Image (cartoon, rainbow, N blue to C red):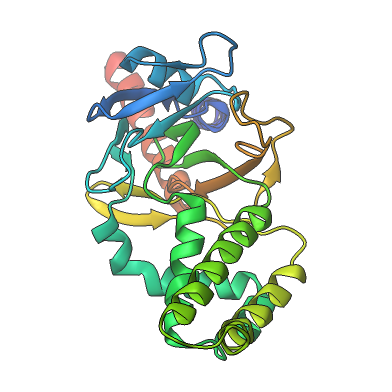
Length: 300
């Protein structure tokens, strides 16, 4: 009996050891949803290509210089364009975000942005509601939230997800340019309403200058594009205010800024339950008794 029990214990330990080292299989992206997407190849002369096969390859090739832009031609973000992946019990859809969807979580997005950048949070409360609205529009306009560029995506059988999107490593130059345009336009509109030049400039600059000062305190303004991720029917909106330097820029960007930042999003999978030691011992004992009974039956 003791010999059989020892063999059972050794066999069980081998099985447990083998199960511990077998990694869950990673699922490929099954297919694209919608047709308004395009694949960036980072290859001179063949920079943007069409087709589902090219898109799926870019999402799973391990090469950050390639990406898929969802909602490629959509200036009006009124549709969800994306892809689907399946692994084990998990079905994941990733898509662009519509304007209507963004409005449902815009306040939370702004709160998260201000939490990420203390200088902006300090001056935000002192801005008029109109200036706050313009600022929100500038930030989202600078990012282009509805046409996210996804470089890599993976899903495994535990439900673990990893996704990298491409954007700007530092949006400050672009936001500053937009602020200058807004400032000039607003001053001219006030002057057109009969407000004297100096008074118009003073009124606008009293709101804009604190905002510019806050931006200058930030080393790099990092705001990712936004993706909608739906896991087994439950949706969430994914974004980040932390980028790493990609080490390259888009070949067709003369300003040399696009794709300079990598924004990562990861979701942990579910850990498989490990039997309690008492349960394992019980299983071993039952197995040993079964083996002994079988041996005795042969003797009879």
